Image (tube, rainbow, N blue to C red; front, side, top):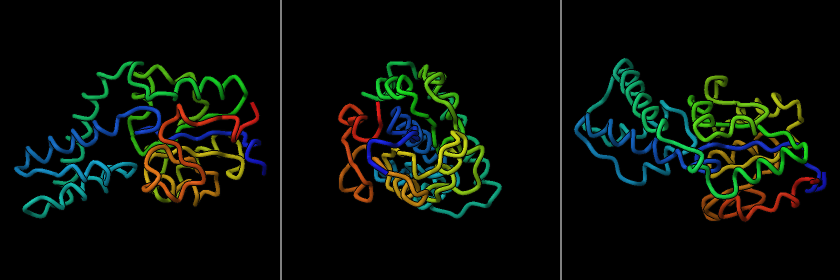
Length: 218
C-alpha cells in the first residue's frame, strides 16, 4: 500500500493526545508515599502505556516488603481514585500541540479515527478535553484481555472502525505501544524520542511536525 493511502488513524492517549501520563506518575508517587517509600523519576517512563497492575508491580519494586494480591488490588483502586481526581482538572487547553488540528483534518477527509488507550478512564479524559466527537471508536483497557505490547488493543480499534489493520496508522509515544502497533501489522508513527521509538516506521517530535499528507489521501 502507498504511504498516502491509509484509511484509518488509531491514537494512543497518554503522551499523544494529552499529557495525562504525568497524572499516573503523580498518583503512583502519592500511593508510594502513603506506604512509606519513594519512587524515582525513571518509573514515569516505565509505567507509560502499560496496564494498572503491571504499573503497580513496577512501583512495588521499590517497596521494602512484599504485598498480597488483596493488598495490591486495594492499592490499585486507591491509585485510580487519585488519578480520577487529577483528570477532573483537565480542560480543552490540555490537548497536546497539533492533536486537535490533526483529528479535525482527518475527520474532514473521512479518515476513520479511533483511540487505543491502556487507561480505563479514557472516555472521561476525552470528555474533559472536549474531544469525544472527533473519535469514531474508543478501545480502552475495559475491553481487552492483553495489555500493550500485545497487539490486541490496536486490533480491537481497527475492528471497531471496520478497517483492516494493514490500512491503519497507529500513533504512540511509548516503546511498548510501538511494538503493539507493529505486531498488529500497522504503520507506526512514534511521537517523541527517536532513540526510544526506533522501532517506529516514522518518528516525529510531536503531532505539529506530522504531515498527514504523508500517510493519508486528504
